Image (tube, rainbow, N blue to C red; front, side, top):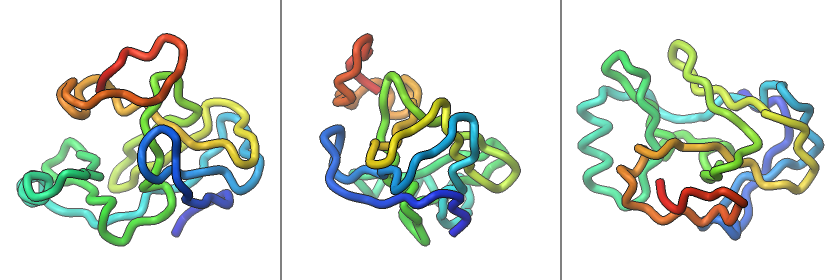
Amino acid sequence: MNLKYTIYNQPSTIDGTGAFAGERITGKKKIGNLGGEIISLREARRRASLSKRVAMVEFGDGRALDASINANELRYVNHSCRPNTFMRVCYSRVEFYALRNIKKGEELTCNYGPTHHDGKLKCNCGMPGCIGYL
């Protein structure tokens, strides 16, 4: 599903399930595209209201990607205040790139931003400088 590197899922110390590098990932390289179903923003909000766990990315054009449907391993990239990946929304794709070299077995993390959960969710990243919420 558009993955450039081997990624696997397993329990995470950050939150539930995480995405982990199955091989060394070179910094600044594309890791892959997040899998999911493209839906209207209205439908995304409806689905989000019915679920505790939301895996949505808004495109800004009235559409969103629901990563809980037709997902791939990148669906489980957890938040960190000091991430090793970044997410880029490009047309109808959500792409993940390595911010630095990532070791085999290292958990992939992305900064969801302080408004992702309206500051209501405790951050468990455990990194120095953690802001404590997202």
